[in-house]
Image 1 (tube, rainbow, N blue to C red):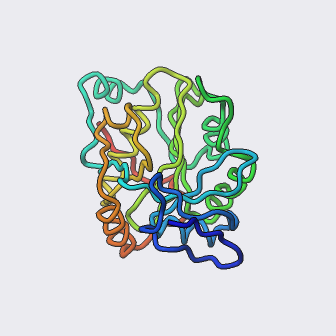
Image 2 (image 1 turned 45 degrees about the horizontal axis):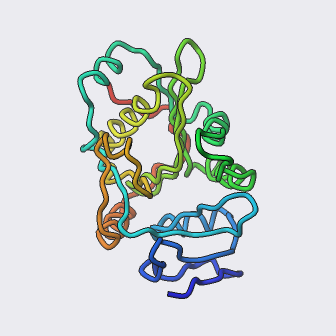
Amino acid sequence: MPIVRLREQVDFPPPERAGREGLLAVGGDLSPRRLLRAYGRGIFPWYEEGQPLLWWSPAPRFVLFPNEFHVGATLRRILRRGDFRFTFDRAFAAVMDGCALPRPGQPGTWITPEMRDAYTKLHRLGYAHSLEAWSGGELAGGLYGVSLGRCFFAESMFHFGNNASKAVLAMLAGTLAKSGFLVIDCQVPTPHLAAWGARSIPRRRYLEIVRQGLRFRTQRGSWEKMSIREW
């Protein structure tokens, strides 16, 4: 299918028109209005410095259902003995900085300055959130994403300390399950997410779950006082 070039219009073509790898559209901007419209239709931006703005809707879609997160015995012990202290929305900028750091085998980052500005705006508007893991008063890991209705669209995660990334994801899944969230969008497959219970589902089913999730009110605003699940 031909790739649509976005200009002034905020709307997107139907996700089913995406190419074989999931590329749907090129161009446009990262305004809050356009980003929220994209996530609500199962579309997300992903591009590198020097590339045009690219919009994706992969098929199949890789997701984690909050109740299906696999908490093994070792991870359960880590969570119960309090190796980390967890908070929501206490250090959004620092989490984005951690996610933007170069990783082994990756020469650069897709979290460009434009991306940072865009998601910081969504955070200020109460749609983008971070979950932090602290160890000894220092940030050991975290993740951030966008929340609409009862869907959480995870964008990126990082860790400085051992076990921090899986502990953060366990806390996110447990807390969102407790709050009635239907799905955590993981976008594309990765082996470590699969080991924790994430799996691929048909795009049609994913879009139906998103539509169902958007029927609920968005928990907009700071999540600092959200009750984090106890293990």
